[in-house]
Length: 82
Image (tube, rainbow, N blue to C red; front, side, top):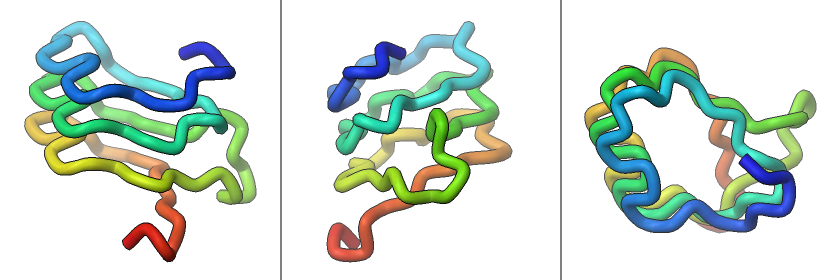
């Protein structure tokens, strides 16, 4: 994904069966509803270049990763967003 991407909109990659892993850029603060829902091959999500965990999301919406094969995910939320 582009490094300057700020959000992943609702249903952006929904039902994309060929997506296996993603590295989300450090600028992304929002992942929309059902953004990756139904991505049956998606097993890994990581925050690009976030070794110290300082790049957090403001919102990871409902069903963003429903119906995936996620085994590992690095998706830190800001504590005030919970």
